[in-house]
Image 1: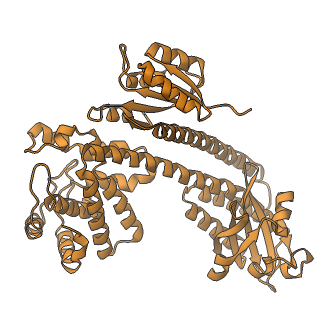
Image 2 (image 1 turned 60 degrees about the horizontal axis):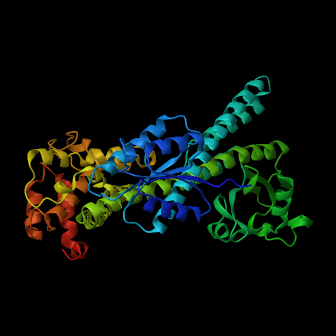
Image 3 (image 1 turned 90 degrees about the vertical axis):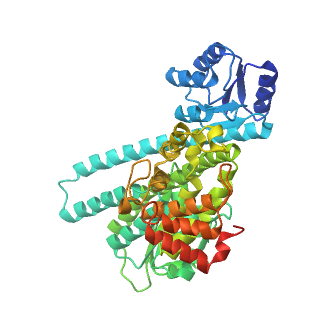
Length: 518
């Protein structure tokens, strides 16, 4: 019998707590309620709670965030995710919550659907984290077993030792990346080089269309790779599904089992197909083949294909899991960005314009598409740290005091602090941190100078300042485009990179539509 997720709701107002509990109970969860810290701790110690939903302000000697902090220190049977409810958007609760590891926020008043979505998202993220831990442990175990196995083979002949060593190297290489396209490219490159085959392809399972498609290939014509589809009912798939082993076909076109199959049209000649199996599920097929008239494939080679497929299965599954985790983390960041927009509505449109200017300028300056994409994401997140700045400073109509200005200068560092756990955003984090550095070294937070500042951050600095100057703010009117351009030129070589300023001014001169309604 499937265990129901266990949810603890901490809310000192009975009239608010009971409807919340009933809302979550209708979603098939087992729900516990607590009106104070003592009851909350008692429930958490007796039950493996999956998600804790707590108000910030709880009657008693400690608030909801302190309850979370102490629960994390307790030896509870569950390791729950945490959701914080608050009706006070202007306090420092979001920043405190982030520091202690809270996964989501709900600002009162909210709709029942928002609570349901937040709880389900927390349960999904918790499940993915548990799967990730299990996968990593499995990979570590497999790596250890492979090392022990290699030690037992030291006395074998040189050729076989070389083959096994190569397999080990391939395993390490394909499991060193968490990007699916990189994993697939490595599998194809190393397998083709090791076996000297005409073509090598990785087919992945499409459950919706009930077929396998070519996710990556080497040696196949592009048109063939796009069209190649092998349905679940094809003899090849049925054989592999039943036998869970490598299939060697001496000549696909002459084999009676496949005379009515499209297999020969896609993969003619000699073929070896090895299943990609992860956690007892067939997730794909690794196919290597020689065109008709080519050399045969030895039994040893088919064994190598099977071994490569075994390791490739783990790497592919891990890369897919990593992609799912990235999506969840980016959803969390999007939620944080939405909180900033609530605090300072200017931030949303400002970030959108800076993103538009910066990506255009990067393309004009000939940056690689991957660098442009990193810059695009950094522009969207460059003011994320303002979530930690007091509202009265963000929206103050007059000049900031020295103390207020010093707090405002902390927003790049605060943004880095929020983003740092997301290792896959390392380049983005660096740009967020550097976007207020000056070309002459008088910027913040680190006083970087000249080429020590990433070129993408120098582009952000020009675009960020230009938009700030040409947009009406609470504390200053908008400059004309001409005055803003003159200011960029005046600060060229001090605050801004002269080359970037020149490229930007030329770009907006030749493409005025870029400025939109400015």
